[in-house]
Amino acid sequence: MKITAIKVFVNSPDRNFVTVKIETDEGIYGLGDATLNGRELAVVAYLENHIVPCLIGKDASQIEDTWQYLYKGAYWRRGPITMTAIAGIDMALWDIKGKAAGLPVYQLLGGKSRSKIKVYGHANGNNVEETLDNLGRLISEGYQTIRLQCAIPGLQDSYGTLADKKDYYALQSSRSLPPEQVWDTKKYLNFIPSLFQKARDKYGYDMDLTHDVHSRLTPIEAARLAKELEPYKLLFLEDAIPAENQDDFLQIRKHSTTPLAVGEVFNTIWDCKDLITSQSIDYLRSAATHSGGITSMRRQADLAALYKVKTAPHGPPDISPIGHAAHAHLNIWCPNFGIQEFVGFGGDQMQKVFSHPLSYEAGYLHLSDLPGLGVAFNEDEASKYPYMRSYLPVSRLEDGTLWDW
Ligand code: CS2
Ligand code: MG
Image 1 (tube, protein in one colour):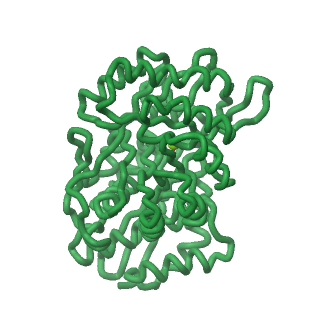
Image 2 (tube, rainbow, N blue to C red):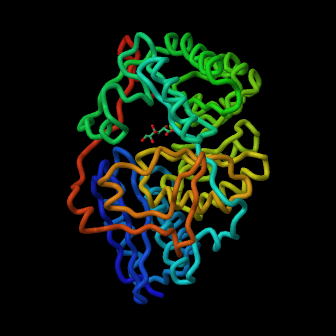
Image 3 (tube, protein in one colour):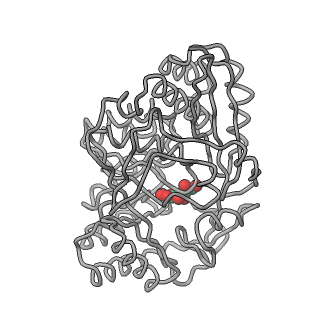
């Protein structure tokens, strides 16, 4: 089966997505997600100028060799642009292989390890009361694990909250230049434990809670927060610190038993190798879309399994339904799957452009047995929503020092 064409689409149904379509001489085509929030056009350029010319005429069945060719053959390895581009190709080749075999991708990975996929939802608010109301709503919708994010008193904007926007998609559309947000660690650290105390006081301990620090603390600050949150028994504390220096997590580990999760910005197994082998983390949050696709995620999951680390794939609004479907196939197969982040199926425009094999019921996703990844992409509908430049925010301390967002 030869690759005859590779098309790259960058559209904005509710928000920007980059979609890879690989066509073959047997009429079967595959779809992949190559969306990188805020840097979409860099990935498009890498694909169209540097990957596509090399793959025309190649055997679409050789997923592994193609992955090695694009990873080692580039010489300049790793990084979000390269690995997101490789991910788009990789997912599309797995989609083709499944369609050619008449099997869902999870069957090609080794079949089901579970019947359904446990998910966690987002409860956020502009104040504690609103956050706890949203927590109660998600509990009523059957979620057994919920992430809490709340505006920090005294700070203008806070990660994970919507301010006056309707949803994450509306939030994204208002960022034609990087908005600048103000951060203050002291206000944050003095506030967050009380949020979780109030959540537990009101709803008890039956459900699991998580929190995303979004990489803003120093190791000892993160150790303090993890220790102060111990009474509230989080399932995990996410992105407590940036993970460039993987050893930093050992500083948190020696002070607290709060489970730690990290990985959404990782691009290869090298970014998490030491974290896993030193057992500094409990959940690996890599995304197939940003870490080299299904081929790479499978390797990361197998390494994690050796050290009793579970997978908790990143599942934000800025991964497309193709990426979410790839996670669903990995999750239903993966023996050490932990939990999947789930922010819903997106807005009306997204649902007109993408159809997907997933349904939500009572805290779980269910995956259909459609062949391949099970996603359809409506090119004509997508063309109605042209790309719109959109940036992630930039964070500064109150004195203007540039900080981690
Ligand atoms: C967040 C993401 O979902 C999460 O855990 O960290 O929403 C992250 O902010 C976005 O993916 C950035 O594009
Ligand atoms: Mg996160």
